[in-house]
Image (tube, rainbow, N blue to C red; front, side, top):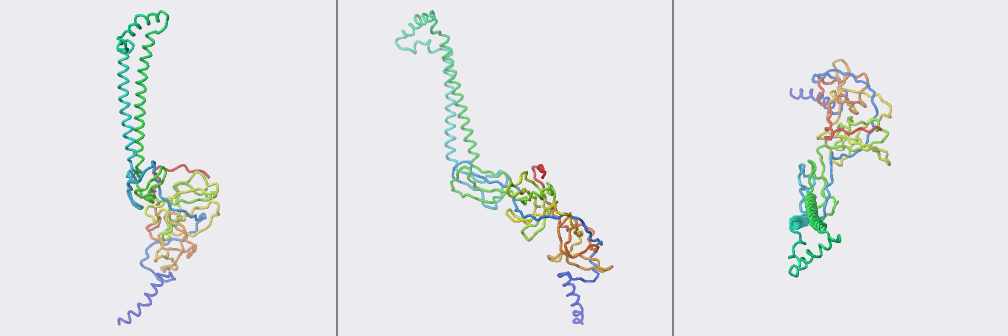
Length: 400
């Protein structure tokens, strides 16, 4: 009895297996396929052009040495993640510390010079040197001769005005004060310059990201301008494409198009994030960046293809079905087609591009007028939302 039941069930099992994996026609009512019948529509869509591009980070910088010196610290290696403000590399600061000590000594010398010049000015103002007989030799006689004979005779002749000489002495002492103050300002500027160099010996992460390439090691001697690390923000990725100038009228910032990634031929939606304002004069192309959705199976440097609409090509007629009508059986997309009333057929189809979040084009397997079974809920559409726009806001879109 058991053998008889097994023999009767075997043909049905084989038929179901063939129907599932090969998509051959099966005239049988499927009670599990609950949904509504939707006609296969013919729509007019524009032709798209597939352009190759490269996945690039949202932001990337090259951290270069600003001063000559020896590398004494590196925060990590390729693939390590760091927050904004983290010190990634440091140079030796012994020479800078010596310069700082020299600048501080010059600053103290300038302070002493200012005080000394102020004292000399006060003494000249209160007790001039020329009025002090103790400043001259010969028991004060030359000063007395100058005071009682030479100066009165010179005043009578209009020569040797004491007020002019006194004013000149005060001006000379005041000039010494001003020179001492200028020396103090120069010392302060030198000290600030050294302090600024202390900031240049450290390379700091300008944003959250990862080290993508390490170009030096601890102990290496670097020169100003020599690259040390490449740092990038790979949380958001973009596809960089060189778009021919003739296709640019159909590209605008914010539009969403389909893209094919090199990993597993994954199809995702990308959004135009940036259109560069100038075209390449040799290749006659315009660089365009497309935002990839978060979590897309891609990494910087990978190959990707973007499908850009061609406004110069004629409009073509394509068949369109709801995305909810697609049934995945392994890697083969299939749909249930209403062949007769109450009888449905599981048929393999070849899909094209998505024209919106809920509809996809069909290249083969259906014809206009067919009815497919679509779910009442728009679930599993395969429409991946692209990454958010740039935090800095959209840039002006150039007109081509």
